[in-house]
Image (spheres, rainbow, N blue to C red):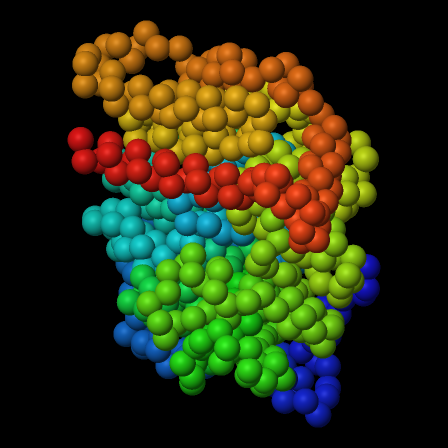
Length: 613
């Protein structure tokens, strides 16, 4: 692994290049912010109101933020000051829960280390798929894979944050509201956790993707994540305190993300068109720089900020296949390079996940069209990784297998990782050997580090054990939430665990029937739900009924060897068909991704039928 310069080395690095010189302005601002934070810390040590000291730190941060980004209004800063001074008495309880500047710097460094150590393979963010249930399943399969959430709109978090805070309190801190809840004030974080929650166990290396184009809203969204993280740490401290006379019966809050990611790659018309964010942000690099700065300061500098983007857009011309192929590769790369330089110029963003296609925004293309029509240009991403060794560059797009991930990393050692979406969704078990093959871990033992799962356990050795472990998650979720609303999401996450195996479709049909049981029974008689076995038992019964023991107990190594053999046979069939020999007799087997896409269409039709009932 090549040595990486630290953030300070990047900022102080001198070069005639404009992207180097722009880093040199950042240390002065850091010194100013450090001095202001030091003053705030001293005031708290002297016994002055914690609300005043935290307000001073927040106002200093906002002053720096407002100086660089005029969109942060002075009225908004004043509102923060007034809210904190009005709650000085209740805020005194939060002295031990709010991290200091030094603590945040330590957290940032630890998370950065985890981010770099787990970036070789990552789960791509996919709307309606990479929810906490599927991420939990992936974590059972792999300890090291970097998990990405679905995109969460920053304005949705900002709105729900305002709704969650009690109307009788002017506090701007969720921590204050949570502590006040013990005194009888209303505070319900459930709606916020709907967007940000991580289930009943820590997820390990994971990234929350945010979408938006408003610096204020992304600042509040990032601030909410930061404060939920503080609440989680406070909850863990209370659980560890054996001398506490009162037992806390509240469910744990897990919102411990390794990094925050800004979506600059989604080409959906709802996002890039009406929403004016996603891939549309690539046409305004200075705004992306402002947005990432807002996210960094909203999280108190404790969480790394990353950006997912494409190699460009169709800005400035009418996209056609022939016209695009005739355009200059060099012009396309220079445009991408300028975007990366601008966004990284402040030293805040050092990690980029780059989809190796352009986003066609000038036409009413669907996301599926944007995955098929523009060609993949891996060489642009590889060149980017070669020219920016100080940045972490990951490749995304078109890689659906573990062998494909290995091939890309071997062909371009400068790449830091590969992001896979549809391959994970279509057959998660196909990546069960990723830790051993990509990270050279032979025993499957999990590393004990910030945000990782319990280091004393090992990964499941087969899919039967995966279902047993996933069943615990399923039962917990149904106890906490309404089974009528949540069960379909839980079973959906495990539906592709046996892709390509005999009777896998029967297993999926059984899960679909299990998912519809709560709604059906509640219509007949709500008391019938009380006599139902737990969801974990229903899932295990479906698997053992329709799948053979050989399939259920096959090890990751055996499964991977079978997949490699299938891939080799598929290549031979393609080669045999291309040479014209017996082409009519060759029946091409669908890939896992194609099978999953067909299954997804069937599921969407069923859901539309159920919703119309």
